Length: 415
Image (cartoon, rainbow, N blue to C red; front, top):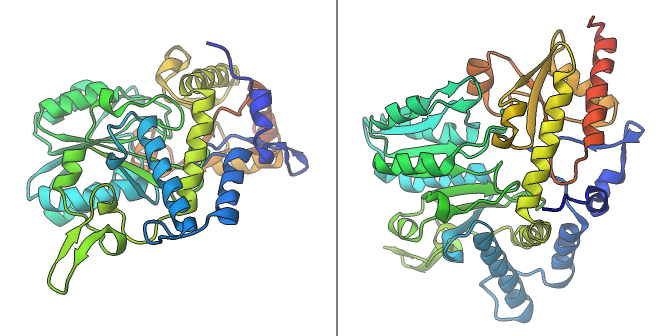
């Protein structure tokens, strides 16, 4: 498989040729949000310039064009994750919104007193809080599978908690802190065997690697446009057709209605049944463009490139005394995504991020919306994080590692 021509790819991203504090920008925060290529920017601009109109409501040419492009976006999203049909693809605001839709629409009528919901210790707040609130409302029990070596889900503990008979197992596919890629297919198989439904938080996997919902056999899967070169404000919720048909939407009104009287309402067909109000139409068009761009490059090639960059970063950080790295090590680089979290002895991560910024390097520092993982499992208040994508180079890793010397100099830390 041919390596990515990153130099050529970077030409598609205008922001990567800018400067930060007078120095060439190094953007290492794609786990938070990705940068956007001209192809996506131009398609969104074209939408506003040439066919901006509300979808499904108009019989005039602009509306029909907008509807057609929005529908095309759904079909591309379905194809990307190998869903059976666009009917299984619900657009919402983001991954958080998608998980909340499941917690409210499926969870409210199906979770009762004493029922169990199982997550893991590495979950993002988006895959903790909706289930936590549901459990509190319903007097249900939220359990979390422990981690092994502070890196991987302890499968023995996971299996033991499955014996408690959870109704829902909600797990991240890839950790936004540790970089760990979970074996979602095996975890889903075990969960189904235990009688549970399975939701996959794929915010950190769909943008970076091939994901096949049929192969995983998950019941629900969620991801976001803005983490995969597309616009913000568009989330994707996949659900199995029969399951989506069987549940009642929790957020109602507008286009998700087939017919309504003052006494009753009848829901629209899938996927519109779950999409109330005017959607982010330009966002759908932008997401379609992002998918086209990613597939033109190839998701497997992107995955290989990120593994290469992550492995290089891990090796470089290992060479620096006083640096602690979290998650799978160099030997397990094939089990992690392009996320490398670390701390520097004697330096607060917020100071690290600020000093890196002065060097033109954008990284994230904090708990990364995963407080239970960072505070309770890693026993840290916060960590610094570099996250990579198809446009990052080894030279940028070198600049980040070199910036550690600047951190020590500014903070007067002895090596």
